[in-house]
Amino acid sequence: MKYLFYFCLFACFVAMPKIQAQEIVDDSIYKRVERRPEFPGGDEAFRRFFTNNIKMPRDKVPPTTVVVTFVVEKDGTLSGINVLRSPSPSVTQAINDVLARSPHWTPGYNDNKRVRVSVGFPLIVGQTR
Image (cartoon, rainbow, N blue to C red; front, side):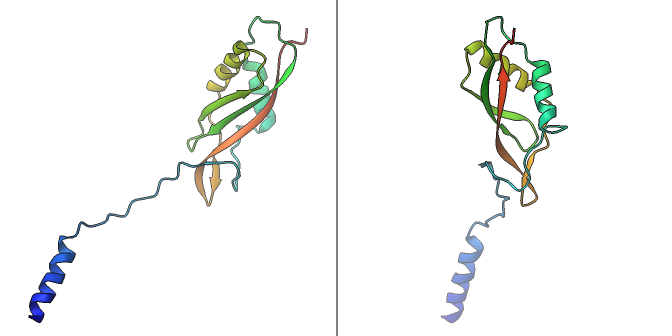
């Protein structure tokens, strides 16, 4: 009888599906990280890139500060671009177009692992003349 019990116990463990260890994928978007994402050359280089590459619409837009938020992905690309307080839809489109052409950023890190990070920048758009 004792051997039957051990046999049944052994059979239960053998018949159970094996749980494979899987790497946990962290797709969270962080606001605070140990090392922030960075545009090649830093914040001033980002502002220069933006100013030199934006194609403003023909609308007469007075100088306005807009806030642009986006996510720097683990591979350095940008996603989730959002323009806050835009003076017009055409300005929003111009901002989206220039950010879509952005070079890859250095991604953010937490615990020595690349993570997705939400970033925000105030930018001045509009015509001064």
